[in-house]
Image (tube, rainbow, N blue to C red; front, top):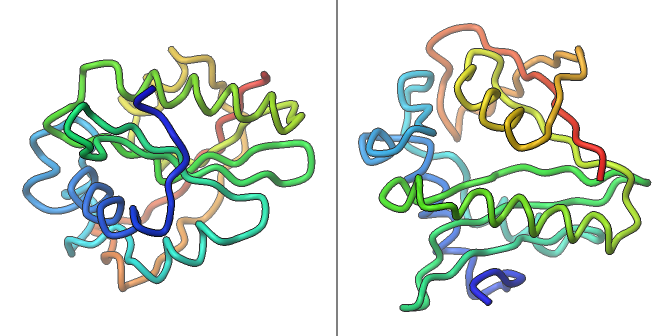
Length: 170
């Protein structure tokens, strides 16, 4: 099965994947790019992912191709009876091949295995095409909007940003 739990040895590859999916010129090959929303090429770093991967209740799922290359990943963190989904990334060169849908399905299965009633996420409000994709995959707008957490290590926003909360019951 190409989807499995990520391990410490996968951190560097996942950071490279996340950066390429969201920031910099390479991200513009795919449709998930946020390059025009930020000044800077970093989405995350190894220290952040290392901390998240070892946090109790947290896992990263990874999608690996037949050559052993990680082409997709997603962070999942159980919070009470809900599962937070974040850092969802698919390589720009591999987008449109169903990897994202497979990762979302695996996240659903993980939520059920953890006895979670729902999965929730935050998405930048101006990313309407991304929000629409999540809605096609069962997520709904909750009406809750949060401030965007600016961390200049990972880019400076080029405009004011907010985060919309989406949720899916499993």
